[in-house]
Length: 128
Image (cartoon, helix red, strand yellow):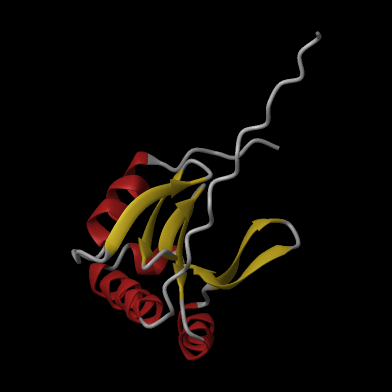
């Protein structure tokens, strides 16, 4: 099954929602825009989902207060600390700022992720 592109309106919303902080690095994961802090993913898009990484306490609150769903990019593959924000939050700028801010605060407090060394390219076998 091919993944869908994120709608332009969601891409625009994401660009506006990413915190304006020098520690934020924007890059893509699987072709979708994401924001990272100290090498840790903070928030991003996946198809039609706007996802944020939250502390345990905030995940519980998001699920109970907002009916936010755990982020599951593939059936049976739940990303533990991430939730997909519901449409009602995306439509309310104040709520979106609140939840992306909680994500940024949580991820900013995590230990920096160590960069993995690049793997060497495999050499092609040649016939002698």
